[in-house]
Image 1 (cartoon, one colour):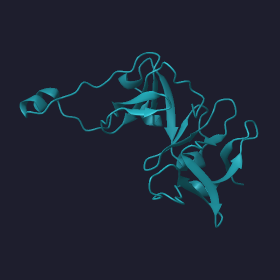
Image 2: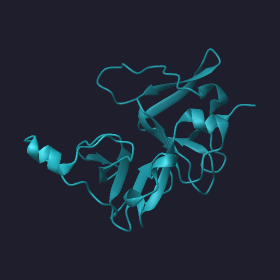
Image 3: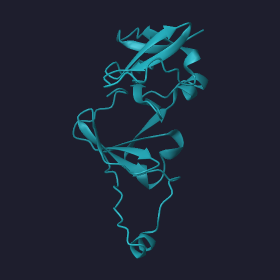
Image 4: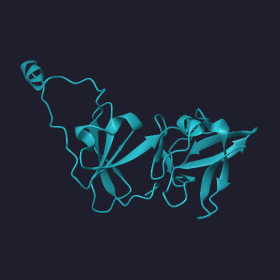
Length: 176
């Protein structure tokens, strides 16, 4: 929803370097599709070693597959709608594509770029952005302990908190 994609009734998959249990987010279960760079064990080799092998899910044709720019090709995204995710450092170098998601590896999904305006909207339920000594810093909300306060991700120097001119919601706007 952050990037303007409807998830109701759709399966959502995220390309990741390791398997994990599905995560409930935005009204649907997000499942994992292994990245092509993930180290895997051959099924026969795992069975010989006494380990069990779980089948990797294959996205349906109307599913959303979320991943980095280089991860959204091949069988994981074959026929599914792809949603690119980007770190703030990449957004500082080039404007993110409409419909993409802002993702920081240690912080999670923090915002998105809706197709109808192209601004970097913040996920205000998860993150708060503010200027501190002239630098944009982030604080993760709804945590039991305030351990991630005033985090400055790479590329934050190119952005400052603002409001979307079209929607009036918090955004990160480019600094001159």
